Image 1 (cartoon, one colour):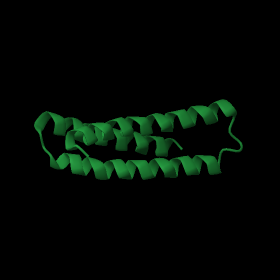
Image 2: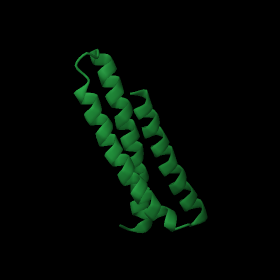
Image 3: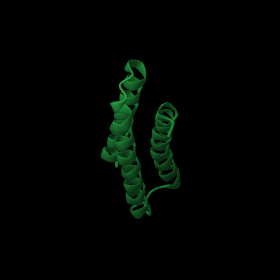
Length: 91
């Protein structure tokens, strides 16, 4: 599970850094790259969530909730970054 969290973290940071650089430099192609990375992150988030629910029977409730909170926070970061892409690209 830790590896999955680290991958979610890496994908989120990579997406944010690309869009941040695009805003600073005006490199429009980074926005379309960001859209692809967002879709990748979104599908990986779903995979992580599915994997968690398939193995969550023996996990204490507090740990279970904490893990779900963490993965949901990464999804929210990605969603906010996507909102920046939408705003700039006028999607």
